[in-house]
Image 1 (tube, helix red, strand yellow):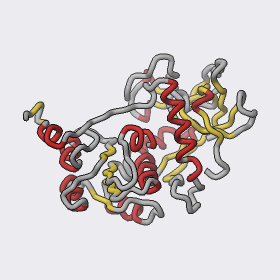
Image 2: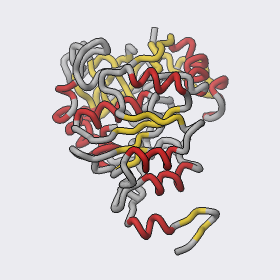
Image 3: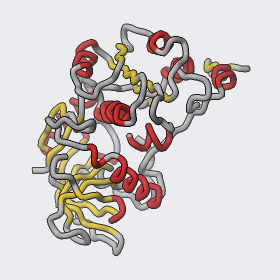
Image 4: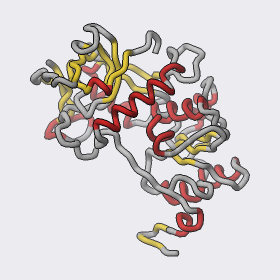
Length: 295
């Protein structure tokens, strides 16, 4: 089969290339999926890139069933094996984990979502809307992205341009000095101190360590939690997929549908143009998902 590889296993987008590799063989508890569409790998994970899969089941499910789900790696290929419990049948139309399972977000909560125009940021915003959140605040890098999000049917209630505004100060204004209940941060780095300022008391996170002030954590009783999916146990991933199917999947519609959850596609690329796709992503110009199509 063909798969996207990367020279020496790491490097920039320009190091990616397509080559022939051996087709994987599914174990008893796995399904072989035919694709149609910087942290260490967990033990046993494929070295081929990609952890989100969409394609056609070849065994276990009825052959030809269209499916999607979670993989520990290998999704940038024509075929991959996925645990049966990690797959769902794709609806005809078609960060739950971070927002709900880790962040504890629920009805009436206020949330700050960074990278609001990314595919994950848009999904988190839609889920927050579905769960009847109160103030749903997102940050982006430009006024054009804020305008695009404002036109979304289930977009944020408030948007902040982090390049021209101090997002911590803006959050305090929007929430009338209360702060948000949850911060979803895909950025890290120098965002942490401002995130602490933006959180309400008891939000999910004296002295100073490496120019980092610990006082807000102590005074507000904050919690900081990190997560990755690839390092999670098979049982955790299967439970996550099961909850997603029960609580969110019934609310999905196509991108032109009226449902509260729907994909927003920025641009699709042939996987032969995988370097262009990743370069587009690195440019931070997208509003929504960048899709790679195996052809």
